[in-house]
Length: 121
Image 1: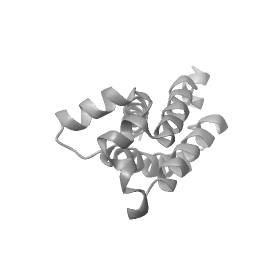
Image 2: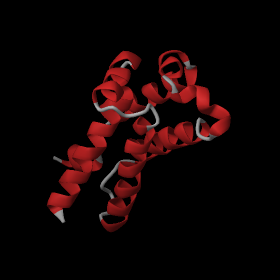
Image 3: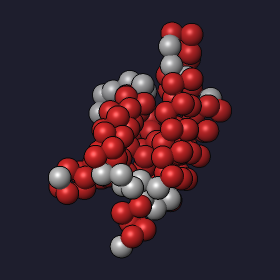
């Protein structure tokens, strides 16, 4: 279980760092991996779901602050989803849409906030 927790937290950190990155770096990642912009959200969503399952098994894994930030990121990405928001999921949208900047700000705050495990060490 500890290895699973470590892997989960590592994947979460990677997803958050990517979401916190400047738009140009996010675009470069999409280009380098030959992935569309929506993969940024899909990558986070996969980890987000796993983190909640692990946190249920290991209560206290994440601080209340981190949980709130993760929920905020999830809500922000969900609000941008759907065909009516297709323009957000383009290179231009990634670079200029204010909703992406909101996601970046939340992700930066989550990266900077300690998890409960880190705080206890």
